Length: 257
Ligand SMILES: [Zn+2]
Image (cartoon, rainbow, N blue to C red; front, side, top):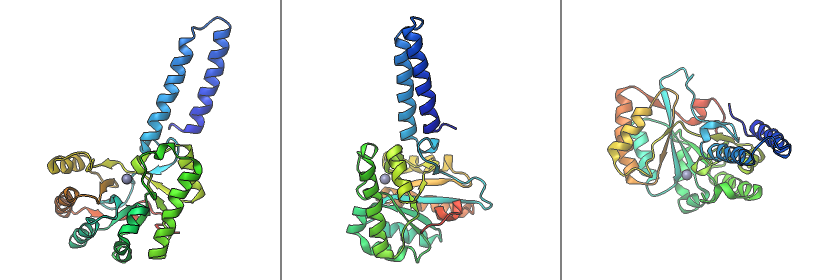
């Protein structure tokens, strides 16, 4: 599997070799540029596809789980929709994991108080969810994670063990800050694209097409569109006798420190 630390040394060695060959007059210069472009391409791909585990080991599914389960996950809350999502989950007796944004928690702190008691898991999704996530310094990423850990601890008394980087972006600074905060990085293997696709039918069929035992499904508790899709998904799951468990249960890891 591709790993940043191995690929880096491979390309450094390759470039030294190509440079030497170029100066010996045995190689045209453009081949060096092609090698650099290729390296940049792999790095960009590794940054934006969390499932590659390029910079950090991200847990994105558990297909070996011994029961017919998936893990529904909701990002970017809490919002005014979150309590309705919770009502639906309760109605269909399903558990989920919520990757909350620190500054959203400050707007809706009350929502967090009951979530843990209802059997769901609260996890960290940075403080600001900035679009510049891939360009923050080590210290800035550390602040994003640590401040949200503090906010969640103040309200629930619990310090999350699970973290999901916004947009699934990873890089060496994010990897460093995850280590520093001792959090497990959680990805997904089913992306609903519920913030991008407008048609509820299409979102639902997209999820169901990719749905398999042990999947981690990425949704967002930010719109009534997702709420509508969720009810239809939960009805289908009930018919097929598929249970949703929290990510920590699916992966057999701790939800809190
Ligand atoms: Zn997000």
